[in-house]
Length: 387
Ligand code: SF4
Image (cartoon, rainbow, N blue to C red; front, side, top):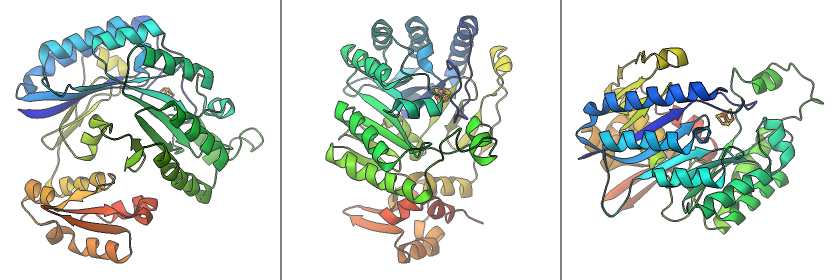
């Protein structure tokens, strides 16, 4: 059977963080319940299209999925189990849920575990309360620690902690402190993204449109400092037994996120819920981003069949995010062409510029970004756009 990942979007948050452009908003209990009903309906209705597939990863993302009760998560999981074939046998499916500190109790986490969740991704971002406040997060570091302890006590043995660097007023030392305190807890996985100021957020108004003075909001670190933080992250986490396997993701041996890896390797996934994106057999589509429409089961999907050119571009710039890069054999299997016949010139140029490296091992030849190439990854990826 072919493999499938399922993404389930929960678009609710206690309140909006200042930097966030994800599809999420505050909600009341009644809306959340209506949403869960619509979601279960959608999951059930779509099941026929996936009769030939076996689900090996599920990811509850948001928003804040942990705003849902354990009973609601159980109901969604029952709907998935009742209508899809889940991987069974030696390796169980990876079922992740994003959790925000301050939204869960020990009992609630036990309920999620019982529903089948076997991996948590906890949004910490920083261990310094003044940085959390500057981001508009709803929790303190102490509250994160409570959530962490509850999670371990509830039996979760596969946990990711999200951290964010390049925060307002953050020094390299402050960032080291976040890395150190997070790593000392020993999560199986750490995601460490740099803050990006996105349009449509309060941060954009403050930092790009300059609607406030610097005294009101500490300045963002400059590019050099940002780069220093990035370098420190890999060196530092290595000492704690984490290896970088993607530009911003670090894991202990064998604990890479299987669901996210499927995005970078362009494997099939079906998205359910508001605004959720899917990609199955090279067709992409997304649900409506309008909550009212979604609740009325008017999901209005926009289907886009990817051309071979688009598939090749994606193959390169998603695959090169991974530390191990892209395999020439895989490229041939997918497109029936040698990678060099399509990208020969770009590959040679990037290797001459020392941005790209090549390894040949046994049956496999791979191209991957050098440390310098990783530093300027956006530039490298852009070279793979085809005319
Ligand atoms: S908790 Fe996450 S999804 Fe919700 S507003 Fe904050 S950053 Fe956005």
